[in-house]
Length: 126
Image (cartoon, rainbow, N blue to C red; front, side, top):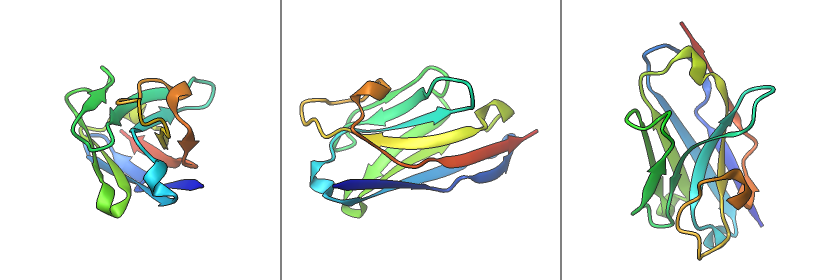
Protein backbone atom coordinates (compact mmCIF):
# COMPACT_ATOMS: atom_id res chain seq x y z
CA UNK A 1 0.00 0.00 0.00
CA UNK A 2 1.21 3.51 -0.90
CA UNK A 3 0.02 6.87 0.34
CA UNK A 4 0.85 10.26 -1.16
CA UNK A 5 0.44 13.49 0.79
CA UNK A 6 0.89 16.93 -0.76
CA UNK A 7 2.07 19.95 1.17
CA UNK A 8 3.06 23.53 0.46
CA UNK A 9 -0.23 24.90 -0.79
CA UNK A 10 -1.86 28.03 0.48
CA UNK A 11 -2.15 31.68 -0.41
CA UNK A 12 0.27 33.36 -2.78
CA UNK A 13 0.47 36.54 -4.79
CA UNK A 14 0.93 36.87 -8.51
CA UNK A 15 4.59 36.82 -9.40
CA UNK A 16 5.59 34.65 -6.45
CA UNK A 17 7.08 31.20 -6.67
CA UNK A 18 5.37 28.11 -5.34
CA UNK A 19 7.10 25.09 -3.83
CA UNK A 20 5.04 21.94 -3.41
CA UNK A 21 6.09 18.61 -1.98
CA UNK A 22 4.58 15.15 -2.21
CA UNK A 23 5.62 12.65 0.43
CA UNK A 24 5.15 8.95 -0.22
CA UNK A 25 4.79 6.39 2.52
CA UNK A 26 4.07 2.70 2.73
CA UNK A 27 5.41 0.40 0.06
CA UNK A 28 7.46 3.10 -1.64
CA UNK A 29 9.56 0.56 -3.54
CA UNK A 30 6.56 0.02 -5.80
CA UNK A 31 6.51 3.66 -6.92
CA UNK A 32 8.06 4.47 -10.29
CA UNK A 33 7.20 7.51 -12.39
CA UNK A 34 5.66 10.48 -10.59
CA UNK A 35 3.68 13.47 -11.80
CA UNK A 36 1.84 16.63 -10.82
CA UNK A 37 -1.65 17.63 -11.92
CA UNK A 38 -4.07 20.39 -11.03
CA UNK A 39 -7.82 20.80 -11.17
CA UNK A 40 -10.36 23.58 -10.79
CA UNK A 41 -14.06 22.97 -10.17
CA UNK A 42 -15.93 21.99 -13.31
CA UNK A 43 -12.75 21.35 -15.28
CA UNK A 44 -10.81 18.23 -16.14
CA UNK A 45 -7.73 17.37 -14.18
CA UNK A 46 -4.82 19.00 -15.99
CA UNK A 47 -1.37 17.49 -16.42
CA UNK A 48 1.54 19.69 -15.36
CA UNK A 49 4.79 17.75 -15.19
CA UNK A 50 6.23 14.29 -14.69
CA UNK A 51 9.48 12.68 -13.65
CA UNK A 52 10.95 9.26 -14.28
CA UNK A 53 11.83 6.96 -11.40
CA UNK A 54 15.37 8.30 -11.06
CA UNK A 55 14.52 11.88 -12.00
CA UNK A 56 16.74 11.57 -15.05
CA UNK A 57 13.88 12.25 -17.45
CA UNK A 58 11.26 14.96 -17.09
CA UNK A 59 8.34 16.14 -19.16
CA UNK A 60 6.38 19.39 -18.90
CA UNK A 61 3.05 20.54 -20.21
CA UNK A 62 3.27 23.56 -22.48
CA UNK A 63 1.35 25.74 -20.06
CA UNK A 64 4.07 25.49 -17.41
CA UNK A 65 7.13 24.82 -19.53
CA UNK A 66 9.78 27.42 -18.81
CA UNK A 67 8.49 28.35 -15.37
CA UNK A 68 8.18 24.97 -13.68
CA UNK A 69 10.60 22.42 -12.29
CA UNK A 70 9.79 18.90 -11.19
CA UNK A 71 12.31 16.99 -9.10
CA UNK A 72 12.44 14.14 -6.65
CA UNK A 73 14.50 12.90 -3.75
CA UNK A 74 13.96 9.17 -3.53
CA UNK A 75 15.99 8.91 -0.34
CA UNK A 76 13.27 11.08 1.23
CA UNK A 77 10.46 9.49 -0.80
CA UNK A 78 9.44 12.95 -1.93
CA UNK A 79 8.43 14.50 -5.24
CA UNK A 80 8.66 18.26 -5.66
CA UNK A 81 7.17 20.90 -7.92
CA UNK A 82 8.31 24.49 -8.22
CA UNK A 83 6.14 26.89 -10.18
CA UNK A 84 7.50 30.36 -10.81
CA UNK A 85 5.80 33.61 -11.77
CA UNK A 86 2.45 32.58 -10.36
CA UNK A 87 -0.68 33.89 -12.00
CA UNK A 88 -4.27 34.00 -10.72
CA UNK A 89 -5.11 31.32 -13.29
CA UNK A 90 -2.78 28.98 -11.39
CA UNK A 91 -5.38 28.85 -8.63
CA UNK A 92 -6.39 25.20 -8.34
CA UNK A 93 -6.09 22.07 -6.28
CA UNK A 94 -2.71 20.53 -6.99
CA UNK A 95 -2.31 16.75 -6.93
CA UNK A 96 0.65 14.45 -7.09
CA UNK A 97 0.37 10.97 -8.50
CA UNK A 98 2.53 7.97 -9.24
CA UNK A 99 2.63 4.82 -11.32
CA UNK A 100 3.31 1.29 -10.16
CA UNK A 101 4.30 0.25 -13.69
CA UNK A 102 8.05 -0.17 -13.98
CA UNK A 103 7.80 -0.13 -17.77
CA UNK A 104 6.35 3.39 -17.87
CA UNK A 105 9.14 5.95 -18.03
CA UNK A 106 7.06 9.13 -17.91
CA UNK A 107 3.45 9.79 -16.97
CA UNK A 108 1.62 11.99 -19.46
CA UNK A 109 -2.05 11.36 -18.67
CA UNK A 110 -4.14 10.78 -15.57
CA UNK A 111 -5.12 7.26 -16.59
CA UNK A 112 -1.50 6.18 -16.25
CA UNK A 113 -1.51 7.01 -12.53
CA UNK A 114 -2.14 4.29 -9.98
CA UNK A 115 -2.12 6.30 -6.75
CA UNK A 116 -3.05 9.90 -5.97
CA UNK A 117 -2.62 12.32 -3.13
CA UNK A 118 -5.56 14.15 -1.59
CA UNK A 119 -4.53 17.45 -3.15
CA UNK A 120 -3.45 20.81 -1.79
CA UNK A 121 -5.24 24.08 -2.50
CA UNK A 122 -3.25 26.88 -4.11
CA UNK A 123 -4.84 30.31 -4.33
CA UNK A 124 -3.07 33.07 -6.22
CA UNK A 125 -4.25 36.64 -5.77
CA UNK A 126 -3.60 39.46 -8.18
